[in-house]
Length: 445
Ligand SMILES: *Cc1c(COP(=O)(O)O)cnc(C)c1O
Image (cartoon, rainbow, N blue to C red):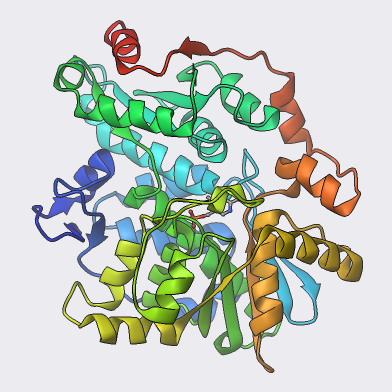
């Protein structure tokens, strides 16, 4: 399979190049040249299949031309060592719990899949001079832990996680500072934007790039966002096993950078029968405004309770436009019309998020995290008679324990997996925010 750039000014790439480079030369995002529909027999069998088998079939449809079948099966089985259950919250509203992975976040799947795919592609050069791949990732909390754990122990790859000193929660910090092995945590004396600036400067620095192979692991990478489609196929399978008509399903995705919903839309293009989608946002409402007006006006992000969705210029918006404009063939009006006929939006303030968490807990006993709360509320407000709503619960509420307890007056339990991280010893490299010290540190590695 070849991949083209959404900006249309870069050469086509094969999967290996798209994964190793992440971004195309013209700064566009890579898109597969074809999205192949899965056969009807597969959809008929799906309710009887396991999550692993469903995922393997979906993966083969995307990556089967470029990865041999045994390699792909191993990759999928190694990535999905946990479940993604559909939990009934109330009549016709289900929570798709995407937080049963190693760091209790849905990003675990994409991070692990990408790590193993990089490893697969670099196997032949391993051990040769300068073959080590160095992944640089800046984090405000969640991405760093998912990427660090996904890449932990993967041969031939070293990960540097840059995070702002004193600005991530203790639970988040221990998830990437206690791992050791091929993971190095770098504690930057600055804010998240300083971390991101250091990573960007490193990619631009010629001397550094001659010294070591550098790559990034953010959500624009095709190997990170596409595997999330596995979740949506599984959700449809489980709901139809419960006796629901798949043609009634409304899928609601709390969105920030729009990678997760984008994977669901790719699934839809592969024939997954979902009636319509809702993108639920916090106060960062650029996509919502696009749906209303047809105009896309990126803004600076606003800090909210659902901070993993604090994005003012979602990177994957370019993919959604490209998908529904058929790579620019349709006009802006036609594209907007196609998008709004399939996807609607919602936007909620912090007050509304907290109020929703309280209402849901009081009425149903289900503990929402602030991100999932946006999804649940959008369904409550928009679901039509006869429809079945599914919202993604994107993080375990214990990851936001302080906020959740404060809002609900609870003392929710911290899962053992999180507690285990908290027992480890913190190791990090202190770093100033100027590039020269970061560069001289990397030049010594
Ligand atoms: C990353 C994240 C999101 C947003 O997902 P996108 O793919 O960026 O839209 C939502 N909730 C949580 C908890 C996250 O970590």
